[in-house]
Structure formats: C-alpha cells, structure tokens
Length: 389
Image 1: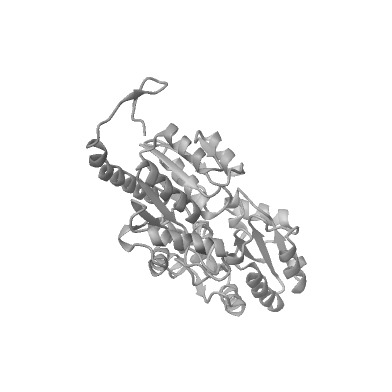
Image 2: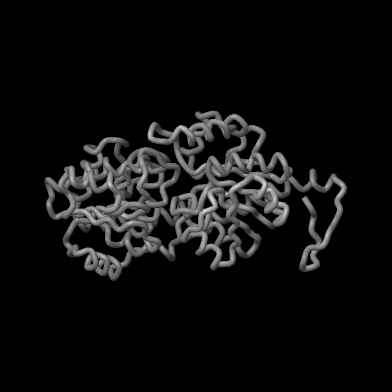
C-alpha cells in the first residue's frame, strides 16, 4: 500500500514523534512518503530520509498536487489541523481517501486565533471531507465532538511506547546526574516538552519554587525545544523565583531515553494534552508521574502516580511533595508498576497494528468505487503497472 502522510511540520512535538514511530513499524507492508507544509528541513526530516522515507517539502497547493500525482498514494494520512485542512482540499480534487489525525485535547485560551479558526473550519467539514478521523485518546475524541467534529467518523488509536528504547537504567541515571552536577540523593523532578504556552512552564517553575523552599535538596531538570537559558521568558521566570542554581535546562534532547532514568518523578504541567508521550515514556522508564488532569493523563497514569488540577502551581507542588514524602522505595515500586501498565495498555506494536487495520479498511472501502470507473493503465519508470490520478 502506498501511503502519503501530510504534516504541518517535522519539529520535535508529539505528533511528529508518533509519525516517526508509525513509519518504522509499517516499512514492511507500506510504501510511505511524508510531505511537510512548512517546507523546513529539520533533524527529524533528515532522520527519516536516512531511514529511506522520502520527505517532500513544499510551500504551495500546486506543488502538493504535483507531488501527489507523482507518488499516486492509495490514501492520504493528514496530521494536525492545518494539514487536515490541506488534506481535505487534496481529497476533493483527487478523490483519494483522506484520513485526519487529531493529536491534542481541547483548545485553550493560550492557543492562537489562527489555530482555533483552522480547527473550526475542519469541524464544519468533518462529516464529509475525511474518510475517517483518528484521535489519539478518548479525551481528545470527546473534546473534538464537543467542538463540532463528526462523531461517527472518529476512531481512537492511542499512542504507543517502545519498550526497547524506554527503560530504567542505573548506569544512565548515574551518568546524567554526574554530568549535571547532581548527586544520587538529590530529589530530581523532570519535565519534557517544548516551550509553549500550553505546556505551562511558568506554572511548573512556580510549583517547583514551593517544593524547593521546603526541600532544598531538590532539582528541576527540563528538556525540550527552546528550553534553554537563551529563552528570555523562561530565564525571567527562574530569576523571579531565584531558582537558577536548582534548575538545569537541557534544550532539545533527541536521546530523551537517556535523560528519563535520571528523574525521581516526572512533572506534567500542561493546560491541554491529547495523549502525552512524555508521560507514557517516563512511565516506561519506571519513573512515576505527577500530571495535570488534562487529556488522557488520568487514564494513562491510573494508580501509578498522581493527577492534579491544571493551572494550579499549588496543587502541582502538593503532588510533587506527596511523591517526595513517599520515599525512594515506594517511588521505585510505583515506577515499576507504571512501566508494566504502559506496556500492557500502550505498546508500540499495538498502535501500529491498529493503524494498519484502519488503512486496509479504508482502502477496501474505496476499492469498489475505484474499480467501477474505466481505468487507463500506464507504465512507470520500473515498468510496473500504475494508475494515473
């Protein structure tokens, strides 16, 4: 099967991460191409190309249409709102079935007006434009139905976690702590996520300030795109709470699996999520989580961590202190239970199989309509029969 993936960009967010995983799982049965709307070359686009996945960067609808006519996909999988809208236009012109992918929870006040407008436009055409809609969680499905998306088109496919990549490691724990100047007894709170209003870094810093005031032997380690001391709003928040000595800013880490084992607990301060990869990956590394009650966090965490109200530094601080007070042995047991939960419910292979079943079902549903039309065969460069669009 030939599948074209259209995505807004190939940065370092959760949607891009999930797409990368999906591409690796489907190499044996699908020919796949990735097209980006923003046209930027990134570390992820380079990584995909090294693994043999063609990445096409384009900036215009005409370029997109030309590329589709060249690749002749059996279906198009769009990722995130802007790409979903582009996919809808593409499907209307080419009659190729298009699947949408909704990767987040409810839109919040911190989101841009443009993003809200594109989401509303997609909701208005969701009953007829896509052949189907994938949501990454039940929570994401419910929030989008409430926003006007067509419920009958939606399939929920949770994200999957790679058990071989994410795992506990004492060696990695000790080595990163040495690198950061932290000893083995320091209580390390970790955070993984790009710098964005919806990730609520200021709330996390305010919560950590409360913890550090009561427990000086703590540290906050944050990694993600733009999470560096060159970020003025982030640096200002740290100065405001006088926390520079207690905080380590690592920036974007493509090897986050080497960072997670150094944490005693992961904090998720987000104002909205669909399915948090950071939460699930920390659990896979046997790190218990304190997370805001957004998206699928409560369901994913279960009884292996704590869920607190979103937008409240005091509640987040209380949750972190509660895990601190449990002591290392109980946290270790919680982490192991978290790891077992992730791989029983959210394995990477399970995610891949669900996407494959959806794609094959979509292709079968399209086949009778396609077969009913007169076909004119042509020959491609390798001499194989192909069907012009």
